[in-house]
Amino acid sequence: MSSTEKDDYDVAIQKALKASIGAILQMIGFEAANPIALSTLTEMLRSYLTEIGKQAKMICEAANRTEPIISDISLALIEMGNDITKIEDFSKRPMRLVNFDQATSTTKPPMKTLRVGQRPDMPGYVPSYLPSFPDPHTYMSRQPDPPSHGTYAELREKAASQKRDVERALTTLIAKTGETDLIFEDDPLAFPLIANAKQPLPYIDALLPKEYDTVTSEETGTDANSDNPYLRPIKMPQLKKKGKTFIPIK
Image (cartoon, rainbow, N blue to C red):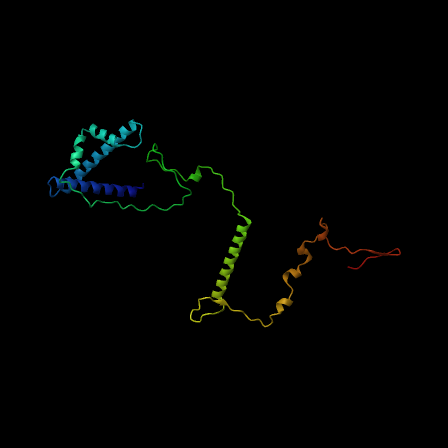
């Protein structure tokens, strides 16, 4: 708890105790109270309740427990000299006043921080003033799960879905940035069609050589010293005729 939150919490407790003291004074017959006297009575009530909590905590720890129970509070009240048999009669008094206008603390929402995993709760034997545990991945080892590649059908379906999404996105982009043919004249955004651009010579693309038709031998990876005979350059055979050797011109 930060200092600002602690101050807001103390102010809320002070207002609640002051309202309780005012209700008790009004119940016993007082119509007004001096602010200084009201503050003094509030501090006395706060010190009294704090002392009861400390005594109950000591009795609880002496019994090897971490959280006080009703019997611990009863023993604490007895040790402080109170008659606990009159508490029930006091709670059922006829002129009891209920203060509905209780002060509430306005706590600021905590800052959102990046957390990995879920932090475990503090055990009961750990004091509350100690810091909480860090993220589990900082001190716990865990084997990562093997990646799931899926079946062949799932991969094909995923690839088809991605291809369909890309085509749809490109079609929408071209329809919004280029010329389109409208189906409905009143609504230009409903079902736009990509306009077909007319070319003066539509058959010229079929006559021009493609990129894979102009690949050179260097790009295909031919090597004279290659172990693969299909990648070696062609060697023309030598022709022999009556003691003369003819080497064809390459």
